[in-house]
Length: 97
Image (tube, rainbow, N blue to C red; front, side):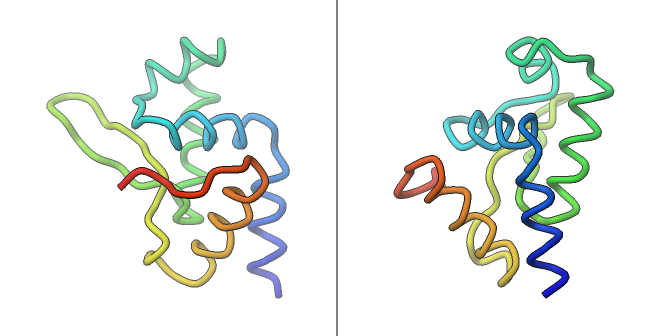
């Protein structure tokens, strides 16, 4: 039960939800997220760290850049629960692969 509470707390933050919505459309790097959200790099990095720890995001390195996108459902039961909850809340049927 505590892992469900952790996921719900994590998804209860508006900035983290905005990040998830953005990366559900296309993979983005920290620089792009700071520009779009108008936040400092340190704040974006902190939110990304929380989302990565809960396995809601996956990283892809491309040269000097790290791009973030939604994790795949197969990442684990807690991740699948959180992603289904998130997808249902924003009305998306399928995440990009």
